[in-house]
Each structure stands twice: as structure tokens, then as C-alpha cells.
Length: 379
Figure 1 (tube, one colour):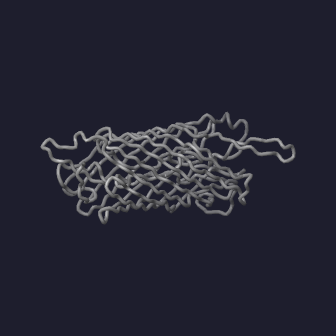
Figure 2: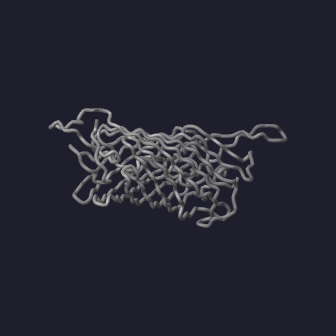
Figure 3: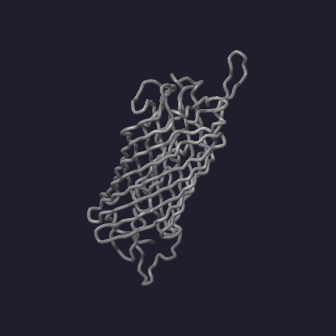
């Protein structure tokens, strides 16, 4: 089967604290680049604040490429994924936030050529667990602007299968032969990965416009099959603004790159793998990503979609590679304080917090320096 696991956007970086979740989706399986979905590009929470976040991501593609050219040649009809991502984050201190994140596949499906059921592969179940603490290195607020720098160091633990097989009955003998499913539909890469992350923010207080950037590098590990998905890097530039108090819009330009897949030479001594081709893995892509949010009190709803602008796939004379097409994410975030301790100032006044930027705190009524909203008293 001359196919390669779909290497398209599966999980991407979020916007900012205004955008409490984002996803470049699925966790490091099927040639995907990032194992973070929902929360990859935000700063830290307020001390003793808890965030419960989940998002649903739908991916579908049937576009195949040779380098940067869209081609008609294909070895299967397309790929589809339905993915639910969960995150639980807690503000350990005013500078440190720790989160535990988990992804679950409702469906991963590679559709066989001409919709052939014999070469259509599906799977569902557990994905990966991600431990992802973030630390605020710098924060300064003036009369005209605000700035902050946050870094993160994450660790991905594979939970889902990476070597599932499917049985095919040989029509003449009636004997069942088991073949490993394509990498695209395995629930995990089976490897432990290291995640490096950085976030920069600059807010213009008078206009309410915020400009920020995020960068991520994922150092992929080797799995027990002697395979290593290519290291992944991304850089995103964002601009956002709040309007009508409860609504927000963010526009993102993002660049992604992923190296070729590596296979242990001792594995290749026994012949090429049957369901992927390492020389036709890896990519470089540009995306434009609009995102809308609605915030009411402690609850935020958000929706986002990735629009591919340019993609160049690593291919060869014989092998094409499937690229990005449709990626849509819908999510909800709920934030609240777990303790009333410290909510009252020493003089007895009540602390006020921005519902969209919980790091914005005042000992009395004030406006948020990032979005201009009135700070709300903490009850």
C-alpha cells in the first residue's frame, strides 16, 4: 500500500489568555506534529485558580501533494478524525501553573482507495497524557502597555496503542493474516516526547488591542517498534481584540515544520514497513487561523478553524503525501477559585479580577489593562 500517514495539522497553538483553548489536535500519531490540543499558548492562571477545559476537534482531508503541488495521484481516498481533548489546570502560585491534559479519539479513519472496505482502517480510544507546567518569567504593566513572558516544559506519556493490527482473510485458503494498521490510525506514536514552549505578550491599553507570539518545539522519542516521528516546531503571531464586552476575536498566522520520520536501521534490515514510507514524511506549512470567543462570567465558549495557505510536503518520485484541508475546533472553558483565602485585602476591600484575564487583579474597582473590561469582584 503506497501511502503515508497523513501529516497535517492535528493540534496547534492557542491564542492567549483571552483564548482559553485551542487545538492543533491529535496526539502525536499518524505523522501529526503536536501533541497539545487546547492550552498550548496561554500564560499562567491566578494563584489558586482552577481551569476545566475541553474541546472537540474535527479533521478531514483528501488532498494529496508532491512537494508543494496538489496532485490527483493517491493511494487512499482520505483521512478523518474526531478528537476530544481535556485539560485540568491549577494556579499553584502567581507565577506557576500546572496542567494535566488528555486526548481521546472518538474516531480515526483512513478511507481505502475507491472506498474499498478491505483497505479502510479505523480506530478509537485513548490517546496520550500530557503534563504541562508553565512559569511566568516577567510581567510589567505601565500606563500605556502591558508585557509578559511565559515559558513551559511539557512531557508526553503515550497511553493509546501504536501497533494495533487487523485481520484479513485470504480468499483461497481461508486463513486469517494479521497486518499492522497504518500509522495514521494508531492512537499514539508509542513514544515519550519532550515539549518546549515560550509565550510573549504585549497589550496596548488604550486601544484594547493585544499582540502576542508563541513558539513550540517537540523533541520526539523512539517507540518500541524502532520508529521516531520527526521533531516538530511551530511559531505563531497573533493579534486580538475584545468588543461588546463579552466577545473576542483573534487572528493568527502560524508556521509549522516537521522533520522526516526515522526508522531504526536494524528494523529496515527485514525490509521496508508495509504501511508507511519514511522518505515521504515531514512538511512545512503556513496557516491563517481566526478564532471567536464568548465569555460570560467564569465560562468561555470558543470556535476556531485552520485555513492552510501554503504547504510543502516531503515526497519522492513514487510517493505522495496527504496534506491539511479542514480542521475545526469547538470548546468550552470554566475557571473559578478553589479557596476564599486571600480574597480579602488587609484593609477589608474585595479583590477584583478580569473574567477574561485572571492575572489582572485589583484591590478595588478598575478596568483590565489588556481588554478594557471592568474587573469583577471575587465572591
